Image (cartoon, rainbow, N blue to C red; front, side):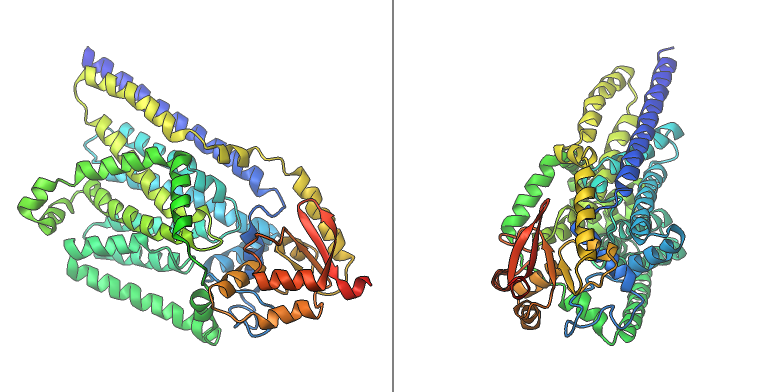
Length: 508
């Protein structure tokens, strides 16, 4: 009777977890649909990405050198940009299309994580436990601050994350089956052509494969390398070499280790520390140091490679390690929390595997009840939103909408070239983008570009209107550019948080 009672309580617990996860997903969807429909610039990079999507098929402009106007860098590969442009034919709005691609990709990512968790837990465990594990994994991904903030932005990351974690899932679930490994590598290459820094999962799979099945790994890695080189060769040929120049030579930013320390500390305090601790526990409890010393690391991995759960822990651990190392690039000037996305998702995966593996393997009725009671506050800690997330989802955009509408009217009424660090308002006003300030500033400060031609535009009053956020203390403009604007332009007034500058010669 006690065993039956325990089984019933276990099913109720799992159904509650599944129900709570569904509610978390619906809440996430409601939040993102609201954010997606706000037709204002929600992130600086949206205006830049929108313009790149418009121009990606224009080979006279896309990935061109910075030797003439427009002075705009293409820092990302073309996959997301092309997909967004194709989707825009159905939506009628490129901004809405780009945000929709990101949101659909985010839900696809959550589904992929759920499937990986469900399939990784041995089938000997009750299917309801496995379903609850998968549902919690998806909900945890959708409740992570970095995902909430990035899910419905017109940025390249979420499509790339979907492709990379889909490749990771295919690789883990394929095991020794070579066709599955080839397909996983194909997905990894696609992910790299959405964002070139999405490398943690393919590296993790390659490292694991060299221990578990080296010959197969060598073949699939050669396939991935050749496929990637083919894609690079096509892009290089179409752009006369500009593709590599833009994504590599022009993708330079000043770097600060102090910023790295500050960003990691802040990120862990924003509700990522519990996930990190659970992930660390999952890794520590799996890697049996005594057994590894006795039989050797290679033998240990070979023995574990036949078990889906063990493969997920091993490859997931390596992926988390490399994702964390790659996240150090957040120290680049202008980088923000999207650099943590791959790491955050890897921690969600490992944390859920630990939680439900421990709970599902308990056998004693009394211990089951105790651990379920202990699990509830743990789950509560995992889902507590940070103050930043709360402020994001509750923000009133009315003021920004009115502000940008006023700026667009001003641009309409001003003939001649326009410069703004809000590129979206220029696009909405139907005007040409002449320059994108931030990446030009970063590249100049890193010593990668001589900005003299750019400065000459300000010296001769080329821009008839400059609409910008604060110049001083902003990394979006180099000191020389700030000096040139203040020398050759006159502050005419303010619109909300934006400053309005016009050429001094035109105001005399």
